[in-house]
Structure formats: structure tokens, C-alpha cells
Image 1 (cartoon, rainbow over the protein chains, first blue to last red):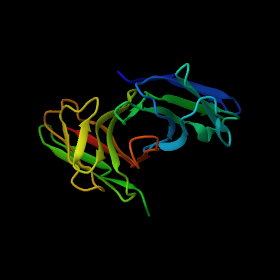
Image 2: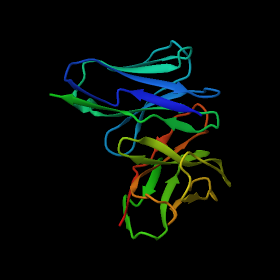
Image 3: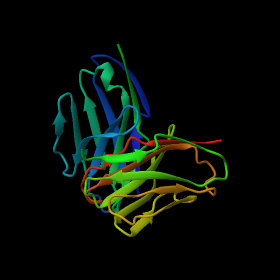
Image 4: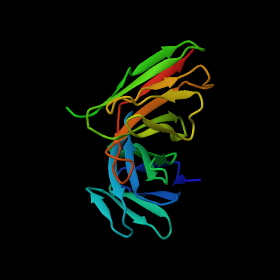
Length: 110
Length: 113
């Protein structure tokens, strides 16, 4: 059975801290891994990773995939209160569907 | 503007009634999805469709039904057989089901009283 496990489930940090969010997966015929940020309603796309070892970067956010160890990390440096959200990891499964983890709720305190 | 639209944003129904949630996209995407989100549960897949007139069950399809008669529309019916229908429902679409990001609607919060 395809599955995605995120850790930690919740995290509280202070502004300026650096955080690392984890996503491990088990999926037949892996195609890609995606990261989303969900603040209130609709998740918004952050990154899509298909190749191992290649870092994707956007401002203070970066992500990398390890296909051998079946995991990905999302790093956020110099966190701000606006980074507070639920971060979702998803993998394209063997049936072509998106499988989501439970998410990591990040709270950034001033 | 291109995008994916869910309606209504909030919906209240009495127990035992069927209710249909609307999802429309004008992105010319082949694939569409319905997810349910409960606190602490992340997104769980209800149904998905890879192409018009075709759809597959997700992990929690019991008590739900869908149709895909048009490329741009993928309505979800929550039937009276669904034991815990109160939840936040998200619809998404992507170009195909492989290697493309999914775009989400703003969601419908269904409350059954």
C-alpha cells in the first residue's frame, strides 16, 4: 500500500530559526514528490521533485529528494511569522493519484 | 482568469440528505481529484478522474459518488450512506496524473446537522 509519512506533526519555533520538515514515502513506481503550503484553505504549490540529489530552491525555502532512502526534506531558513502554515507532502502513486501525508503544522512565534 | 472553482464555500445539510459539491476548472486539465480533510488527518483521496467519462475510487470512496461527463466538471455527491460527512472538501486538477502539480480549489466546508 502506498503511503506518505511526515514528521514532525507539529513544530513551534521563533522568528529567525531554521526548520527542517521531513517526508518519507513508500510507493510503487515512484514518479514525483510534491510539497504544498496550506495556510487557510487551498494548498499552494511549492516544489516538485523527480530527481534524486537535486535541490530545488525558492527564496528561503529549499527541498531535496533522496530516492534511495525514500525521503525528502523541506528547509525554511530565517523563518517569519508568515511561514506559519501546514506543510503537506504528496507523492504520485502507482495508480497516478496524489497521496498526501498528514502534514506538519508549523507555528512561528514573533 | 484560469483556475479551479468550488461551490459553495459553506454548506449545511440535515442528516440523511444527499448533497452535491461542485468543482469546475477552466485549465483544460485532464485529471481531477476530490479530497477530504479532517483535523489531524491530512488530505485523504475520495475519487479521482484521469479523463472524461472515467474515474477511480480513492482510499475513502464509501458513501460518495462522482461523475465526469465534461472535462471541466467533476461534481461530488455525499450520500446518506456516508457516516461522518462533516468535513472540509477540496477539489484539485492537474494536466495529467503523472509528474504535474495539482491546483486546488478553495474548498467546501460541509456541516451535517
